[in-house]
Every structure is written in structure tokens, then in C-alpha cells.
Amino acid sequence: MTDIDASPPPTDETERSAVKGWLAVLAVTLGIFALMTSELLPVGLLTPIGSALDVSEGTVGLMVTVPGIVAAISAPLVTVATGKIDRRLVLAVLIAIVGLANLASAFATSFTVVLVARFLIGISVGGFWSLAGGIALRLVPEKHVARATAVIFGGVETASVLGVPAGTLMGDLSGWRSAFAAVGILGLSSLACMVFLMPKVRPEQSITFADLPKVFKSNAAVRVGIAMTFLVITGHFIAYTFVRPILLGDGIDGSLIGALLLTFGVAGICGNFIAGSLIVKRIRETVLGIAVVITAALVLLAVTDTNTFTAGAILVLWGLGYGAVPVTFQTWVLNAAPDASEAASSLYVSMFNLSIALGALFGGLAVDHIATTSVLWIGGGLAIVTLLVLGGKTGGARGGPRRP
Image 1: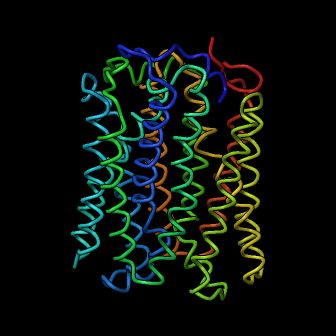
Image 2: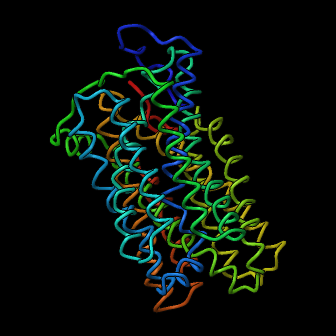
């Protein structure tokens, strides 16, 4: 991505070969896919989970809110607390927690047990993602770093836009518990891959809590990246968390929602690769495009009398916009603070997950106290404000932040 390939080569005792390095990258990618699928899985299963555990759809939204808040807190905490520990060991422990917590959810008989499991998943999400953000720099030769980083964040994106629809489809076919069990098994499989495929990865730098506010206060481009993450991600999840009841309210057959979300997912993967090529020279313009496309999709879904075809078309547009988010925003933040990558990445991951939590929380309140479709207007309004945030100078190049 932008200027990532200008980073210093890996600093481990021996430079990673391309083949071994890419195997390690794929192990991390599988782990982050399992992790993010775990965090977002309830989105497509709100209705059946609520019915089974006798809670409202707004309350079930806490299954997204709780891990999001915990992840926001754990991202900097885990990064600092594990500053001198082998990254492979830390990532392996975190993904093991994900696997076991999802299996616990699959067998839970009360909503309280599920929320405890979601709390543990939040710890893993924040810690794993903040450390994985820049780990490609440590695994592959310098010339492969840009592509390896895109692959790792393709795991975030694929989970967001493909893992959730697949889980929804599985839940529709064989029950929501089977979907959680499958993700639990996926997490444990990811653990095995990391143990056998990843090398020991010494910490690149030890950071302290003082480094976090320092990089935020001293770097305008980092502040802009955090602000636009809050606006776009909160806006997206205010609406996306409740996409199932929205579609049901429009008269869409419940049996088709999994397939529609799968369409959203395919479009999102395309958006990820489109953004990957655009942000090399036009990262600012890519961010502006993301805000406009997501806003347009939410407004269209709110005002259009949808059928299966029109709903699918709108979800394709929405998926293209959101699909571009993770790799674009992570690249913005990494390029804004090349000398403090772990600190900046932990702030970004913290805000990303806090925004997921706030989106689910505020969306749940809106659904319960206003109307289901109100979340579309609120989400679109937040996303479009990103245009104002990017209206001024950010301390970087015309196209966005860059390495010095």
C-alpha cells in the first residue's frame, strides 16, 4: 500500500525467505479472519438468537457492543503489556481464546454466558489486530511487504463481508449455534497453523502508555485517520448491525437474507482490491469515495421500496464502499506514523472496535425507540461528515499521509 514498501527490512536474526514468510502471513490472515468473523457473527443472526434466548433484537446487539468496547480497551493494553514477548506466542494465545469462547457460545443456555464469551472475544480482537497490523514487516522480504499487508487486511475485510454472510447462511440452514461452533473450530484451526507455520517474532519496539497520546497529539494525519474511522465505522455498524430486520421489514424472504449478505460480501472483496490499487497514489480521494458510496447506499436503502433485486443491487454498492475501508484506513494510519507504527496501529484498532460497539449500541437504541429504518439515516449522516474532516490539511501529501 502507500509507501509501506519503503519500510526497513525484517529485523529478526535471519531474514525470512519468501515461501516461509508467505506461509506465516497466511496463518496470520486465517487468524484475523476467524477473529473478525467471531466479532461480527451476531449481525446476521440477531433474530434467531433473540428468539432462542428470549431477548429483544436491540439487546442481542450487545453481542456486538460488548466485544467492540472491550477490544477498544484491550488494543493498547495488550500492545503495551506484551511489549517484550514473542509475537507468535501472544497471537497464538489470543486466537485460542477466540476458539474456546465461540464453542462456549454455541453451547450456552443463557444470554449472560454468551456475553461473558463475547467479553473474552473482545480481548482477543483488540490485542490480535493491533499486533497483526504491522507484522508483515517482520515476516517477508521487503519487496513483498505491501502485498503481504494487503493479504492480512484482506482477512479483516473477508471476515466483515464474507464470514458474516457465510455464518448467517449456516445459521439459517442448521441453527445459530452451529455457526458459532464452526467459527470456534476455525479459531482452533488457526491456532494450529500459527504454531506450525509462524517463526518466533521478536517485538520490533517496546512502547509505553505515554507513546499513545504522544503520537495522537503530535501527528495531525493520525488524528484525521482516527476521526474518519470513528465516523465511517460507527455509521456503517449503526445500520449494518440491523440489516437483517431492515430487510425483513421490507418484505424480503428471510431465507434469502443469507444469500443477499453473501452478495454484499463478494462486492466487499472487490472493493478491497479496488482500494488496494487506488490508495498507492490517491488515498485521500479513496477515503472520500468510501464516504460518498456508503452514504448513498444507506440513503437508497431507506427511500427505495425494495424487492430482492433492488436490495441486492444496493447491498452491492454498500459492500463496495465498506470493502475498501480496512486496508485504506489502516494504510493511512501506518503511513502517517512510520516511526511509531505499533502505537498508531493500536489507536486505530481501538477506535475501529469502539466504533463497532457504539454503532451497535446506538443502532439498538434507535431500533427499539425510534424505528428500524432510522439507523440508515443516522449511519449515512455520520459517514458523509467524513467529507468535512478531510476538507482541511492533514499534514501529509495531497493524496494523504506519507512516510518522510
